[in-house]
Length: 96
Image 1 (tube, rainbow, N blue to C red):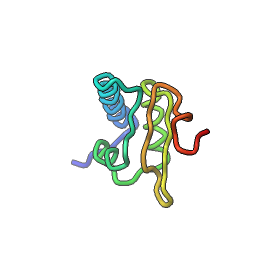
Image 2 (image 1 turned 60 degrees about the vertical axis):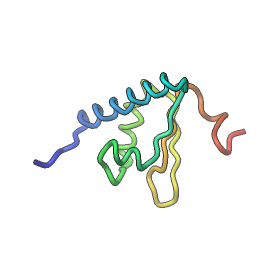
Image 3 (image 1 turned 180 degrees about the horizontal axis):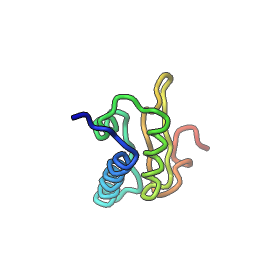
Image 4 (image 1 turned 45 degrees about the vertical axis):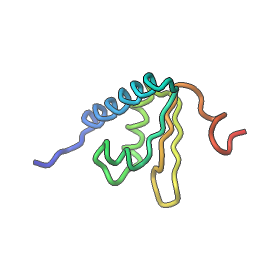
């Protein structure tokens, strides 16, 4: 049976990722996490990330991690996703 990933199904998967991230932050005393593309591929069972799906992911994670930055390489839609409870800009490369 082919699995169809509806918006609601995606929301549930994203919420699991968010809650796992929150637990890791709590255990390690951190304010945020970084998810690499390979981790997202594994967690979500995807090989391609369309703009709409990345938008859904960010929207669903925003409740737990309101500050988000996506890093991309040429030819890729996402390389890594930085998630934090506090502003990230002062700590990211290229920020002054």
